[in-house]
Length: 411
Image 1 (tube, helix red, strand yellow):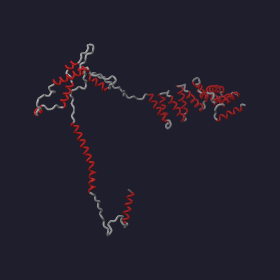
Image 2: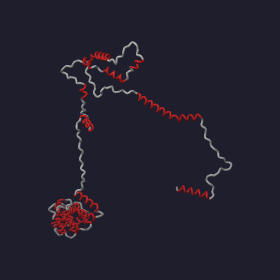
Image 3: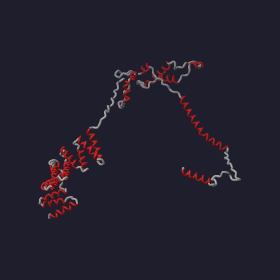
Image 4: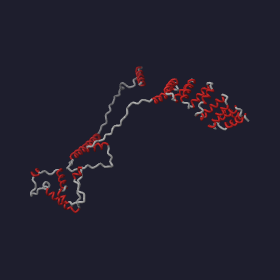
């Protein structure tokens, strides 16, 4: 719109400046406007266009007339009424022998002679118009009844024409008895609930209504253990950014549940990262009093004590767990042997290293520790043998150079 407005303003400014208008306001002198006339249409073209326009209307009218005629013929068609033949109970026909066809025909002829309604009056003169008015021609229903009566045999004639049954055969069952019996449902069809209700209603039987399933809608809250697990997950999520809030949650959990090992380990980790090793040491000692079999806690406590300069206390902490599963842990034994060497106890260190290499003979660093412990005891040959065993296994580069130097010195 701004572009259009700009163009309009340019036009207005040009007209205001005295320029000629873009469109002429009057025709030049000597020039007259001419009026154009519409082309003429011939009568033939006019008739052709009229026929084309009226053709759809004619088609619609023809279709409507055909539909109307079909509806009228459908309404005028006669409807056959029920003539009283029972469709539910089929007629039981007695076995008739083949030679008795002529007897049945004679019985039918006698039946037609005995019916006065079906026999016309034989008179010499044809019926007059008055008689036709009194006795109108039979309707469709009357003709159907006459044909049905002609097809049905009288009971006495049918009884006389049938041969007698031997006494050994089963007597015939009356048609009325058969019609009163209800056919049983097929065995292969499975009845649904709607069919069972309908059959029970016909036979006046009680219907067993299944009881609705009972749903317990009593609100159930979290158990104490579930609530504590949820609080622990909350503390773990807060550890990275809000360690103090996480420590408060974990401390409360340990107060409620002292044997919650996961919460204790997480709280020790937070205290070590905060450089609060005294609090971590207290947590570990309390945990070992409740669960002495936690070797990982015992090793962590010994390292904290060794870093604080309490190496003998750290060695005592480790040796307190050696009668248990600590004696089967290679790292546990290696830490105890290293503390013994630092405390000047090479014999005890050698003993712990021997237990460790028995569990992991391809661990090169254990053989290095063994060689150092033997060297401190003045057993150079055995120390060189331990260094050779260490070189046979994988070692870090700096430790490999150290072992090579030791081997060279012991030659």
